[in-house]
Image 1 (tube, chains in turn green, cyan):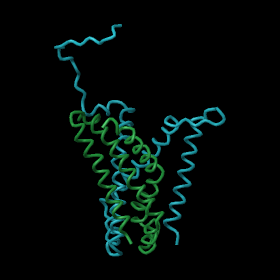
Image 2 (cartoon, one colour):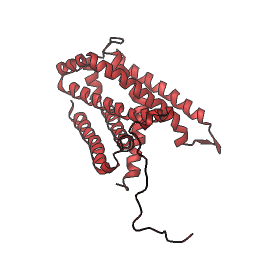
Image 3 (cartoon, chains in turn orange, brown):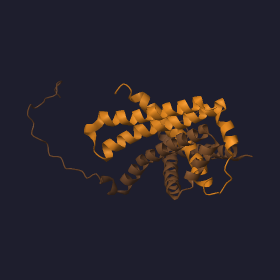
Image 4 (tube, one colour):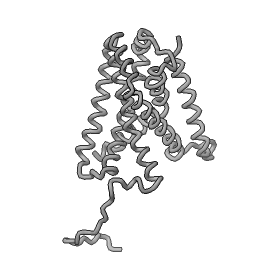
Length: 115
Length: 138
């Protein structure tokens, strides 16, 4: 675990940067502006064509995977310190990074198979 | 100083005050810290929402229509609004920390913190505008 810490921290900070720059606008458009009708929803065909473009696939993989590792790292320490669960260290680490890995695998599968 | 530390075999149980799980409500700076840490939950929420959207897109127009209909339900709208505020808070705290984590030097002189922060915000606005254009263009 200790040897993995630099790598995990790198993923944490890369994911934090991705989320800081890209999440607000995506969340605003998808979660608020489109459902509330403030902007016209992009058409299915347009989005589908966009998502199958190789560069956009790579972009979406980074957009989903790295912030999940950011969450895993930060949430792990939130649980330790915030809820005083120091004795569950190993279990929490496995659950957090494991969830990020599962999400990454799902993103890879969807982006690989979508056509 | 002795080279080797001295350990007592049976030390008495040291007195430790129990700290409440709500310690972070006692001081404003503690609350700001914990709120910053909690932003990660909403970051993960949006990553999962994006996975869901991707799956709907892969399944076809009908599934995607259902996804859009779900987004219009009050529950998800409320959750999205809260998540948006937390994600914004993440962005602000992240940018404000950047000059502390990354010192930029130009011809030997340290670039002032506020310049680094301002450049981050400027880049953020440009990136957001480009993304909005790319997604909403007709």
